[in-house]
Length: 278
Image 1: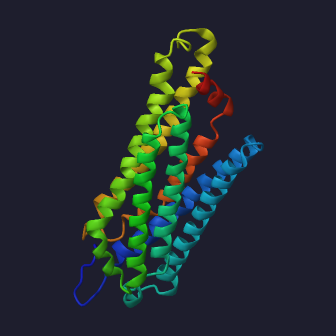
Image 2: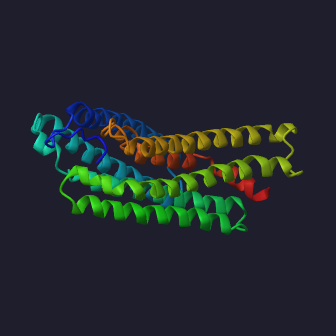
């Protein structure tokens, strides 16, 4: 894999062990943010739809499992096998586990957004949700294949086999996020402003438009954050002098997707009613 400085299979501990430990700290930090947002969601919307709550619980549970797996990886390398380069060369079980959880969490959130785009189009535009869903499912299938490759190999250097495919995997998720972001801007801003029934200059609708723009800003920020994180993963994965530092964003990506889901679920239902009237 990228990061071997190999002379007799010796590993540079600073770019392998250090990368895992630092990434694990950021994983804990983002998990705390997600738990705080989850508490806020269930406190503010106790009567929300049951399947919204089920989606949130599912994604948060995957984030918790992902964080626990990352913690085991960090402990095994930094404590139990500290200085043991032979152990650092072996594939840790949390690598395929984390990959599966991250891909499944991303798929769940993007399919939710595909459904929401269909609702925002007044259930008229089915092509866009199908494209978003297809890209998400394709990315998940590729992710499952990469998980299989990781689980079937014993050495972490064998992850180099994923280098050609990881770009396609991330490309699918990036394309889906890009479509979601652009579509949200259109349906929540451009289409509303072009509708004569909801002129933005009219005072009764000022509060409506202001809150729509708040949702747009938050949604775009979350999607841009996931796009930024995925770009860093792709950019650093094939660098030999970087080692495992691409894990800094890799270990936090499932939390970014879950936080995006929470932001969308905390969108007041009253505005969805207004959208249907637009």
